Amino acid sequence: MTRRPAITAVTPVLRNRAVLLAAAAAFAVEMAFSARYGYVRDELYFLAAGAHPAAGYVDQPSLTPLLAHLGALVTGNSLVGLRALPALGLAALVLLAAAMARALGAGDRGQLLAGIAAGCCAEYLGAMHELTTTPLDFVAWAVALYLVTRLLTSGDPRWLVAIGAAAGIGMSVKWNIGFLVAGLLLGFACTPAARPLLRGRYLACGAALFVLLAAPDFAWQAAHGWPNLAVFHVLQGDAWQNRVMYWPGQVLYTSILLVPLWLRGIRWALRHPLLRVVGIAAVFVLVVQFILGGKEYYPGGIYTFCFAAGAVSLEGLPWRRRAVRYVAAGAVSSLIALPVLPAAALARVPVQRVNYDLGEEIGWPSEVAALAAAWRALPPSERGRATLLAGNYGEAGAVDRYGASFGLPPVYSGANSFWFWGPPPAADTVAVAVNVDPALLHREFAHVTQVAVYRNGLNVADDEQGAVIDVATGLRTSWTVAWPAFRNFS
Image (cartoon, rainbow, N blue to C red; front, side):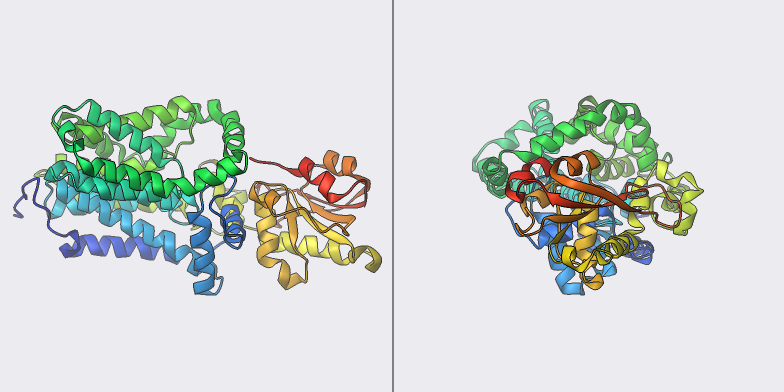
């Protein structure tokens, strides 16, 4: 029987071959389905954003677009290459959950159980399929939680420096990790035995690193009038719907078979004299995101620790059946989290009710082809002074990605950061517009004619199905004057 290590004794988890195999299997599953459909809208947007380097963007910090751009350069702009990074992120979550379990006192079996839970979590399977801010956010949370675990189990305050760096990098991905930081501070405030760890210069060093790494995006936001606040305001329009779905989402998104594990983990941590810090943080982020009307997956990064702590609480109990059940849950969840089904099946099977993004992965090249057909149908005299307009950043990103192969000129859009990359050339007084508000076109152009309606051919409902393609002629003013009306931060 494997001897349970002392809570402060941490052997590198990479020596556990079973955990390594679980991490490799998680990576392999993600890669097996990485290119089954196509890009999701956020990936197309981030590819375009990465080609416009900046310290920040309207709706997120700079790190994800930067990584998307570098990934495209390194892998020849391939979808498989782009998605290797989030797939590696799922493997990292497996390893980090196992490493936390080891640091908390689990033996080899407990570490494996924690790793399997992370690898089979429906939320992680789905999120780590696409290169968006979410997988990077989850990894940043997991790294920070591992470092906090090391701080609490070792009593060495030098870990605070690394924690500040990890949280700061997380802020350069998404502000969401700020909720974890706030929860941990509350946990320390409510845990007298842990408060002495915050004394001394290491907390100041960690805090300085956090601020330094988070500062570029905040500086960009301040310089551009805080557009992210406008995005948050739009997102709040869904707050009540999010609240209704929030707690059922915690069950569905982790998998119902994993709920007892993460609940055990939170309870175990709350009863521990030091790890109560993280238990309080877990309750805090789950409750606060509900109160604020956040989306169901926003607190998802906390579950890596909860799985680890739950695995420790099961130490000494039968584990094989649990492991098998977790794997079975992951297999079932993959039908919804990953593009396992043929794309045409989305029109018949209600998968999108849980994972809407799957539908958003189909049809982009054909929509660009429809736009190109409308472009080529213009008389030569109009085509030479025509611009392309897209209503949302997914469509704009799709034209940016595929347009050159159809001989299309650059695309412009008022959606989020695309608005800052406009306006169109002053000489362009004609526009071929896809999914742009007709009232806006009629206000800014003398003549607007609908020339096509896009269909993806699979009858799959998504944001592009039924998109109208218009030709607008006779720009009433100039693009400098008209462009502010096209701004759409959402």
